[in-house]
Image (cartoon, rainbow, N blue to C red; front, side):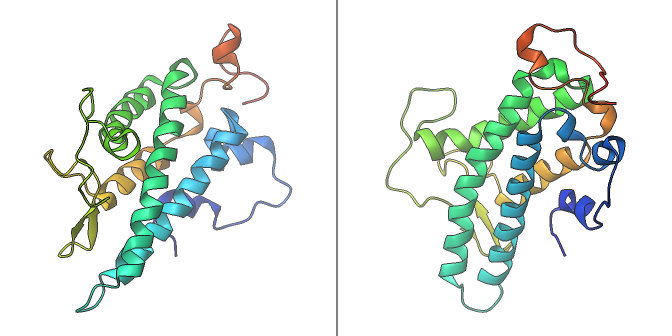
Length: 197
């Protein structure tokens, strides 16, 4: 069973579905087939991260291999999730106001973690983060990773960040996607088209 709710929508296969059925199940596909697929990959990574954390912190001893795998996947997940959210936020005219607000908050959270991990800088500053640090702090009691700059507070939990991404993307409905991705760049009028009805 998937730990990430977003993946639950794919439990039942669609047989010869109509476009409307496809979009009802996977609303982001009417924005971009490619981006929708990337979200599915990120959610699969999230499931694997959670599974590795559960197994790595399950006994009296920590299974370092499992926790390291979770941390490595989390690094890739943060980079990918940030780019997906940034792309959507950049094309904000393609989405409902409610979703744009959710994306804005999520982008800020992801940016807080991405900057120290990817650019080795403190968010919003041209100041280096310390290189003498673990890629992620271990929260053994909560079977979790702390993934932000260790010199900053509050701590950002990997499980919390994965669940926040899942919450936002699981809440997306057909009515939240107003237009296809290319229209945000082509200067075409936005809104419902025959392609996304």
